[in-house]
Image: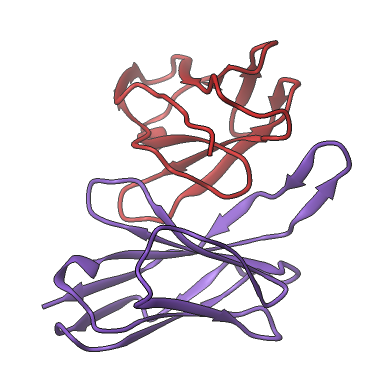
Length: 106
Length: 119
């Protein structure tokens, strides 16, 4: 199974954009890139996914490198409610790593 | 629309006992997956079922088993409970779509989990 690498933690200020990176150098051609987040005491929540092209939805944007070996989740304006662990995952069988713990300062 | 539901929400068992956890997927979803999340770690994949057939299995002992019913709900069974089985057990359902040339496209939607404590 292809592996992802994310920073353990990141910090952001409220109302500012946040760029959460993910490296996946061994991604296969058919692997979708999924992002989930998990708020404290809750199950993971789907954020966004894509294959090759950049994707936008009401929660976030996903920027995928041309070689697909990395991607970036973009939260355009962080709020306190965005504080969570963010997971970058490849393919349909979700193999969760440690994720990035995002803290948001008021 | 109702999301993924799981029961019970909390459970306390003692070592050696058996436990059954239940999951109802989102209406229209035919795939159910189970995950174990130990405190401080990401969820670990246990099983995936699609159309009542096992489609994938993680690195868990045979004490863990699951099944999917005709209505696509699912049960996870754990026998001979150990202290280390204490965790949050998550169920996720998905509507799998095969995209030609791209593979399975499936977004999983998680339930709130069942918190199991083994004493």
